[in-house]
Length: 348
Image (cartoon, rainbow, N blue to C red; front, top):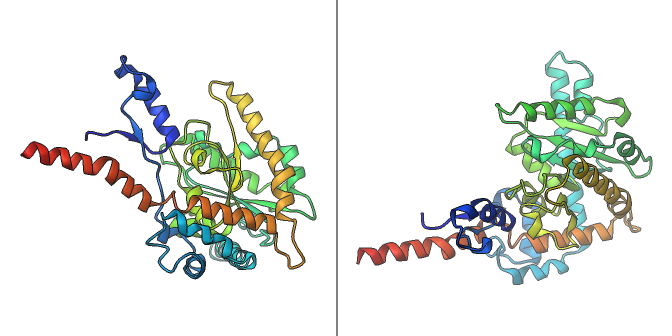
């Protein structure tokens, strides 16, 4: 009760600014609100195949030592083909799970044939696959990628370098805007212009979430700047070598290092429509000039070495920090022990 904190560094800054009027005598940086960045439960979200691989190359007891930075230097010892083979298998598993859901919808219900197509029946396991899977609400801007439909369509319909999008998620029952956003994405998934390269997977749950954070190639995150307290779905994806493409907000403001994914910087206090134009344009630029060329630049064995290098870097740089082991230790060391010590002192 004696300590207050945000759940990421940026969230802490926002909270200190918000609550500054309660401490008029203090500078904003001195407002007594700290920050401890959220993390995820690694054993729950890491793919079993990567768990076994890390036991072999990182450390046999790597789960127990997941927040030990020193062991993650062993990431360089893992063969590129081992990383890529696992990722391809996880991607096949994801696409298979999506196709199975679409098949069941078709066989078990008297539905319109367009519905299984919108659920992903035409997805290609060889295509660059971008996932947007989380709670649907306004500030997360799930439809931002569709800001310039003409430009996006040109990007998506390249014959030799196809890309596809997988959406999944739910809105709060009372969030009418969130429900409308889901409907918009679903309608676009039915649009023949995109040739089945957009899917909205229904009945989002933890089982589907596991497949998604392990099986897509890129994890797209477009929160409006300073409105994402932390976010953790991208952390789960990063554990499995999935590369984040995200606004530099929440945890990604800390996690991005320039070599482990892609970050988009937004500004405060700007016209929101202009901000959406700028951010969507930045995403298109990255797709055209960085992401798509890197993914399809493969060696003689079919391995995209530059891509795998980034996969290794995102696992090396993010796994040891964005986990619940580090988070719990930080709460204990910075807050709980001090509170207990103070309480024990008062008893005496």
